[in-house]
Length: 225
Image 1 (tube, rainbow, N blue to C red):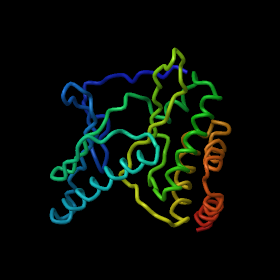
Image 2 (cartoon, rainbow, N blue to C red):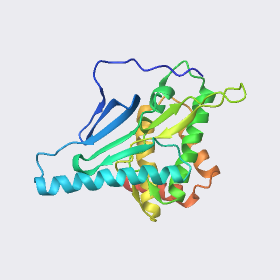
Image 3 (cartoon, rainbow, N blue to C red):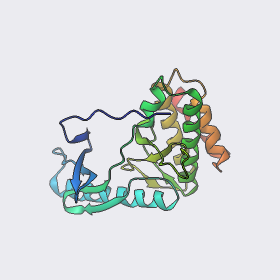
Image 4 (cartoon, rainbow, N blue to C red):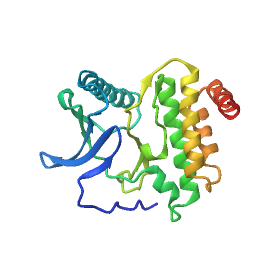
């Protein structure tokens, strides 16, 4: 599979969202990502600043925690609480969303990536880490370097842990999957077997069956609410 290079734009911002701006910069000759939580004018400054600092600190800790679990995440270089900014590794790779929507990518590879995504989620949940924003936009598909002259399968890098928390509740893990299923079904409605591959990867890598059972219960509550 050949991953398409992103088209460079004049804007340094990779993303400008309601919660944060994400900018690409250079530090010591190396490309990095700078994520800064924006000031919320509707909140009193004495409430807004501590909240942004807390969320920035928590996200950096979650990125580090996930990496210790064996999940690929961008390396965190520096956290500046005063400006609610995280300086981290720039991963030059397309989002899983775009790879799954790419008609030139073989379906077998798409299903493999979905399976891998499910495995990653199971690792996070096994360690009680709830991502909070599981979507195919928050996963990067990075091309592995050749080893021993052979091409390696592309690997997934998880990003955006801004809503991540630790929880031992099955309900929270189930809601994590419900939210993913909703966005996946909406974004990849024409892809056959994608969601099933995610579930299979989740279960085969130790994901709890009772989480999937609870996911179905949560879905039924939403459906009839």
